[in-house]
Structure formats: structure tokens, C-alpha cells
Length: 227
Image (cartoon, rainbow, N blue to C red; front, side, top):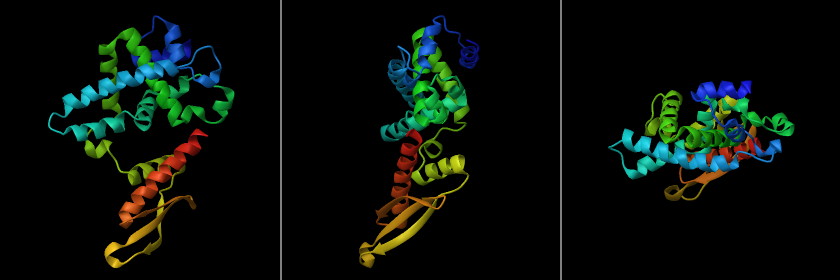
């Protein structure tokens, strides 16, 4: 298993039970008697604990609400996708030919799930302490600076980062109309990418409408990626 050996080098750990790491990398589309869904479930719980503990220890002076926001951003599909990309896990996943042709190795959901499953497998064999050390080092490598500003980004920033990475363009926000009396005005904004309107939203200010439109646009792009 030369490919899996390369991943084990990156993990700094060689599995005694090779079936465990193989299962962690097997997507259900691969049509084997096993897949990584159960290990994904376990890995999610382990990562939630590790990252929660890391934030608790690293930020003694911030509130529970701020800690929750930071954890929600890190312990999410997008957060785990970043860690999976840093680890290069996409090249090791076992997927069907159809999923391969559908660019499955680059899908946020597959990368995120595989990362969770591999961390679940690592926890089962190497233990919590080793897994914690590995995840904390990977976090530091992926996020050179971890704070509210760098982790908890607004929807417009997230959409811009996504469209620049995927298409090499930035979103446009177009004012479609404004209505209502001056003291109670509302605005309707459209979010466009590559001259295609992805979403429309209303808000009590242009900024609010843009944020809502960006949020909906992100959901549209994520759905398209996973189809």
C-alpha cells in the first residue's frame, strides 16, 4: 500500500491494523462491504473535543459565546476541508470512477468526511494524546494566526475567497431596487459570479442585504459542488 504509506508518513504514524486506515479512506461510492461513515462519526466527536479544549486553553479571556463561534467555524465542513487539504488527504481517498469523474477528490464534503474518519482511526490506534498533538500541530500549520478576525469571517469574505479560488473572479453585488419610506427603507441586492445571478436578498441596509445574498450564494455553490 505505497499510497497509504505516504499518508502515514504525513501522520507520523504507521497503522498496525492497515484495514483501519483503509476503511477511513473508503468512500461509500467505492462499493466495498465497508466505508468510512462510522469512523467519520467517531472522528467528529474526537475533533470536537480536541479543538474545544485547544480553544479553551488558548483563549482564557474570551467569552463562551466567542469560543462557540470559533469552534463552530473550525469544527465545520469548511474548517475540516482546510485541514484535509493541508494534509493532502484527497489523493488517498478510495472513490468510484463516477465520483472520480465528478471531481470527488476536490469536494468539500468528501474531504471533510475523510479527514474526520482518518482522525477517528488515528484515535482508535494511537490514542487521544497522539491525535491531540497531531491536530494541534496541523491547526497551527493551517492557521498561522487563530483569533476571532482570522477564523470567524463574514459571508462576503468567505464567498470572495471561494470564487477567487474556484473561478479566479470576485463576486458582484448589484442593487436591484430600494423601497419603503426613508426612515424604514429596504434594499434588494443580487450576488453575481461570472455574470450569473446566484442569489437575491433583502435587508434594512445595503450591507445587510449583501451579507444575506452572499450566504445564499455560498449555499448554492456548495449544492452545485456536491451534485
